Length: 361
Figure: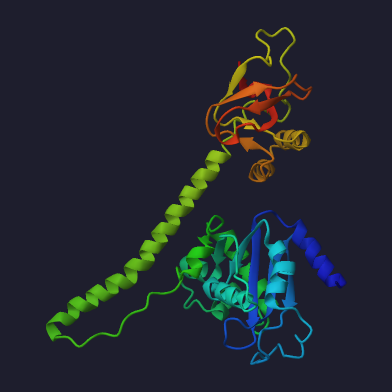
């Protein structure tokens, strides 16, 4: 592995969780299973980074202007490159592509050319073509060249790495101007053709009196289907945001920039004991690992909401969505947290640490 590759992989590990990773591929010929180069690109610390891998397609039939049979002679098959190099790099990222339905059909076909079925988690994809045509009304057309020209982003169309880097820059450009952060279409829906434009049938011979009614019906179908799909996407987006808000509905009132939860005073009545069950209300939180308490308290002190939400998404902090019975397992720690065991709900039998201020006595 050369120095440039090592630097690129290091920047990939340093990028923000759930940030965009763009994918692009070059085909050796017109067959979907002929990927000969696949590239990834991402943004880290304000800079664009990327990495590409050469792939040996199943046939030595090349019409590509930039990749030749000699260049990929010693390369691995696509399935091997995907399993050993690509798939592990896509964790904790939101995938993006231009014309993602065509790209992932090519990925599937190239992978399965080796005789194994392609299995990939049903992730959400941000499609640059769909987003640009949705949020840029004066775009003209949704070709990759037109989108890049509109955004003033340079790109080499014959190089998958250049297209991937341009794609991630395009998504970043849109995210800064429009509310597309929570957008995403399930990969299964994309593979089923959700982004394909409706196909119109050739008109059959008809009488003159029927022509205007048939034309009205035709245009109604053309405009209604995209409108319906858009409504479904908007509804899904708001439902997703609502669920996210429910999960992160934390009671911060017990904390301030200068005050952290303190253990109950020694003389306080009805101290927490092990022989009773207690209730933690909706919005209370439990920290499964003791090592996460200090970072959580630090985030509370600095009011770093993004860090707190990242800890919740990584299951380092569990937010209860319903009133839940818990059992005390030990004495309160000096930082105000006490070991507990959850007795019901989605997290039954899970142990962790809870602030004593969150436990109803």
